[in-house]
Amino acid sequence: MSLGSSINGIICRWFVYISGTEPCLLEDVLVHDHYLPLLLSHDLTVHAQPTTVAEITTGNRLFNIDGFGCVWYTPIVADFASPGSASTLTKPSLYPALYKTIQPPLHDANFRSICSNTASKVVLAHIRAATSTAIVPTNNHPFTFGCHSIMHNGYISNFRKIKLEMCKAMSEEAYTNIHGELKAALQKTINRIVRIQASTLSITPYEPNSLNVTVTDGRSLIAVRFRDHKTEQPPSLYYSTLAGVTLNRRFPDHPDGADGPHGKSNSDAKDDEQGKNLDTSKSRREHGNHVIIASEPTTYKNGEWTLIEKNRAVLVEDGSKVTVEAISYPGA
Image 1 (cartoon, rainbow, N blue to C red):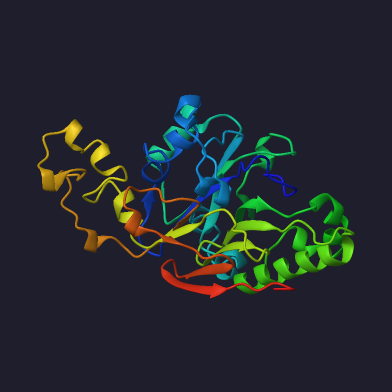
Image 2: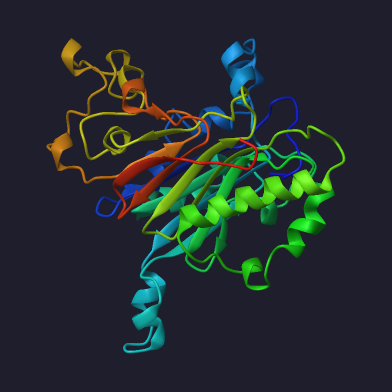
């Protein structure tokens, strides 16, 4: 997505799953009927309903087909490093594998094969709504730098006018690496952007920024929902520590509930079993701790999701320990 602006409220969407112990199947979290098929549909009648006040407020739209990217973390690089080498002693144990396309991914047999045969404890996915930059795979999120992955939606206002000053503020190392504690790094970046805008732009007040951004190294993660405006809201962003169970086919539920394959219209299930996968013996208690952060809820259970407040950072340590902290910015 362009860092310059959004058009007519169209905005990118993203999803991230992280756990220290419980892998998820990519097919379960990305390809079920409640998520990608709807968001990537070419059927305009699916999206022909009037835009609601809530959609206008949050800047969310359902029709995003300008590109797709996905990352899943794997231990393969570390596992195949030479025993006793510097890489095995000092390098991370997980690295991101990356898939990007500008074609509808659900039409790609390779992507479907990857999803049905790949499980990971850390998964990121991003649906792009392009603005002024080229529609090419390299512009799709997530972006990877060593063991780090980053993706966002929203925009930095007047980006072209402040791009030079932003580049001057970056070290050579910053072009290729992300180092240090994630919250401090993102907080510093947001502050620097706002200060450069204040000192560079002749327009006062300048258009506010709107950024939902996440960064992970495969072990810890931070997600920020940010807008530097007193009343306006950034695009929606939710987190859940429960939805991974609903999304996992090995457990007795389905993200679409009674409207899914185990629903009343599709089976002979009893009323108290609607939407349940009766072929599994696993209970919810057996699922490992995890965190999901997404632009919108991806299961039918709204109670599983918490809206992240404006100008808040969600920090995840060890794949499950969640803290929420305030994000400040100059002039707040």
